[in-house]
Length: 168
Ligand code: HEC
Image 1: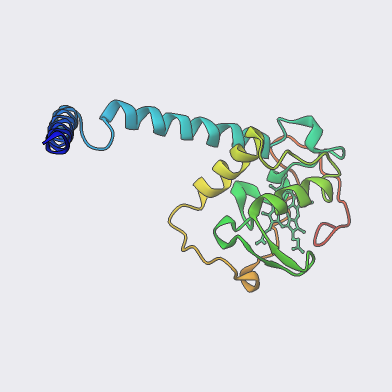
Image 2: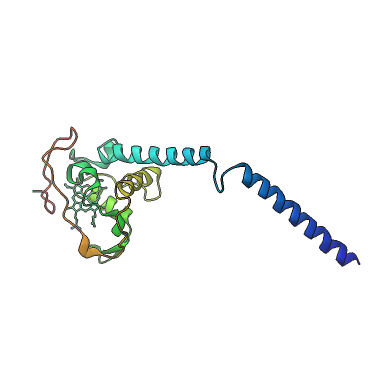
């Protein structure tokens, strides 16, 4: 009898919980309200915007030779985020996009690598991935790597060829 009482109480609690949830859900669009979705989109676009500025030289620690990502990867060209993680021959292993971002900071830009888990790195990803939306995701296709497009000048950045790769 005691056990039955417990079971009944549990059933009642569950059904009250379910109806409260149903009421809450019908009050707002499931799973998020329009306002919540707008806030989430704004947060993403703010990260994309921050990434755009980092990509164009807003963090001086990322370069010691005046080059920014935008000089060789205008509009995130040839960054191919949708192909990561993939095997990159010069690393001899499968690497995430973030590893390649830091490689380009350290080598062509002779700068200081970003914290791979930091907000700046997230913003770099947000920008590159946002510009590659709707591109088919093809992880592992190292063969699809395309040479960066070297431009004579970025958005206001002095051009100093590094001699690395195609950057002569
Ligand atoms: C001086 C030109 C130059 C600059 C500046 C430069 N890169 Fe690169 N980037 C390259 C070269 C060269 C490669 C190809 C390296 C290789 O795999 O041989 C490359 C490759 C990449 C790749 C890999 C693309 C793929 O398909 O595998 C990513 C991602 C990338 N760069 C991001 C960046 C980011 C982010 C910055 C700014 C922090 C940056 N690059 C700055 C020249 C540059």
